[in-house]
Amino acid sequence: MSAATASIDSVVAAVEPTRVAAIDHTSFRRRFFRSHAAVTGSVILILVLFSAAFASVLYPGDPRDMVAQASIWPGQDAHYLLGTDMLGRDMAAAIFHGARQSLFIGFAATSLAVLVGTVIGVLSGYFGGFVDDSLMRFTEIFLTMPTLLFTIALVIILGPSGGSIALAIGLTSWPQIARLVRAEAMRVRQYDFVSAAITIGMGHVRIILKHILPNSLSPVMVAASVMIAQVILAEASLSFLGLGDTTVMSWGGMVGAGRAVLRTAWYMTALPGLAIFITVMGFMLLGNGLNDVLNPRTPVR
Amino acid sequence: MKKPGKYVTRRLLQVIPTSVIIVLLSFLLLKTAPGDMVDVIAAESGGATKEYMDQMRELYGLDVPAHMQFVHFINRVLHFDLGYSFRDNMPVSSLILERLPATVLLSLSSIGFALVVGVALGALAAKYRGSVLDTAISVISTIGFATPLFWIGLMLIVLFSIQLRWLPVAGMVTVGMDYANHWEYALDVARHLVLPALSLGCFFLSMYVRLTRSAMLEVYGLDFVRTARAKGVSEWRVITRHVLRNALLPIVTITGLQLGGLFGGTVVIETVFGWPGIGRLAYDAVAARDINLFLAIFLCSSLMVIFMNLLVDLLYVVLDPRIEVAQ
Image 1: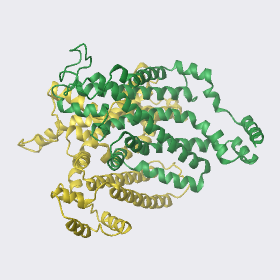
Image 2: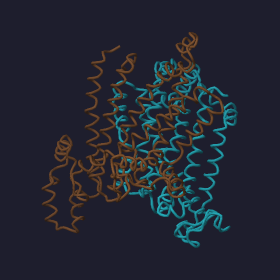
Image 3: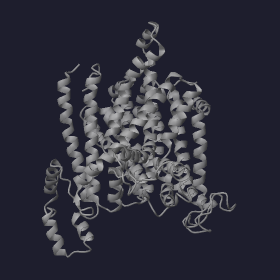
């Protein structure tokens, strides 16, 4: 069986007009490093990942513990560079630990959205007809619902834990990916090499895995990067509204708590908001950069 | 090309299954949520006996099988009877209608602001493509996308209300103020409106900038623009009469869709500014665990989106007869 399928692969590979050329490794690297957006975004994200990874080393213990006098302004005490909040907790520790929650939800929800979106998009675009019609109707319903309200409803039902928040945001985010993958699958399906593969007797699953999906990879990568940014913003909104996971530090929750003392200590609101902004910006820049790098239609200036 | 009449009918018919599924979904969410209406009543009145609760369940039709409850539910929704809020002691539909004007005012002002400024900036960026101005505008729009709206709102409060004391912190009117005339009232509301409308507008603004820029760049490359220039039409006229006009279609679409999503989109900003609209109502409903009220808002918002989507699609037929109505 393996010899037969291998030969089919080589026949099909020979007729496939490789878009893979755009993802050729050396040229990818060169284009990537030439893109200011991609490089800036990556640097920011490496710093954020570093904060999340080393939060426990740099700031051991529970960031929710009181460590000093309350409401020390940033820069006032060298030991607490970003100051302390109204309960005397170290702001810097909270922000470093908060990175974990944002990144965890960001990656978890986006992975779920990419998984569901890819499966539905590929089935829809590849098979077309009745399958496409019903799946797109289904997708449309998810696009119709107000995202934040639906997420809130799900969180109320599932309870406010990290997993349920990721699940809720992931369940509301997949339609974008589904539409994208569907369009790619429809495009690729028209090529002769797919008809050739079908004629030779290659199974649908193999065609999808070997030819349709790899071709959808680059637009999905771009979309996923931007989606992580949106997910982090959505999680921040939920936490800000008090619907987040209250057992861990989250940036949105910190902004929400700081709101009560906005008049006297606005830094408690400003700093975690800035952390959200920087992280989201990092993912957006990476997404924009990847788009320039992977999308050959965009001229390089 | 297919007949527009046939398309319109088909599009109208499509609305029915989508709406029914949305209603079903709200019903399912209502059923899955912990506790039913009777639990809420019992909690509000500080406790109730088992017999009393059973009696209440019978009264509100909660003792019949779920599919029968769904039939009743649809029937009630068709009569715009969305249940009763025992926390606020009034029908949910009146609660929503009462809050509607504030949300409409806020959304229309922010979308209006974003539309005017966003289209202008997007057009400038497209006209001077690749220049420093273009880069600056694109950086601004990326910032608008990357900043949490609630944070923009809070920072505007810090700057304009707390430090500079130019504008009020929250609410829609000054509490306890006597108005000499309608103008004074309107001015007071307007002063309260500035900050929430600006914060909410930031997101829409970024979207309009990008949309206008890319739509205009697409049209710039087309033959009829070159023809117009070759004819000696002034550049200003080329932009306003030819390029912008043709780029308008996607802008109209997005505006329609945004207006559809207006119920759901304002939760965060209305909470930040204590703006007495639907979004704030939804937040209060969640905080008070009034699931019935919350899902009624969810249902209304979804139906609103369906309606606006329909309207946009039908507008397309009118606006652009070239559009071939796809199968």
